[in-house]
Amino acid sequence: MEKEVITLRLDTPSAGWSAEPLEAWKTDETIYCLFQLSPPDGMAAQVITTIESGMQLPRSEKAKKLVVLGKTWNWSSSDSIAFPESREGFLASLPDDASRIEIDQNEP
Image (cartoon, rainbow, N blue to C red):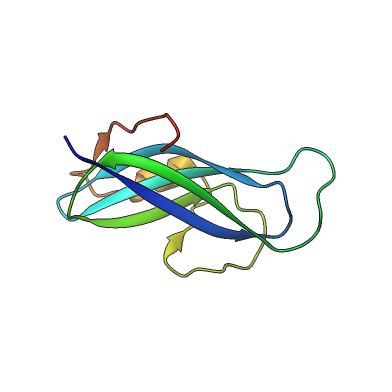
């Protein structure tokens, strides 16, 4: 089966932030790609930094929606990314027909 890489690009308030792919969910129309943000360990330069992370999924023509957990600042560089308060909140917002997709945990 062909694969595709869904890429998250996000501005963070300091260097050292990272994003890891967690899981993906699909409905009849959309694939939701869930990422987890992690803050830097220790001191980090206080400069807006763009981070990038990829999620490898089976190729699909469905619309992709990026969902990110762990954002702690009150501004966003993208209206196309959803920032729910928690994984539980995200799962509660999914339609009833949503099902989980296996993702490749290896770096794309």
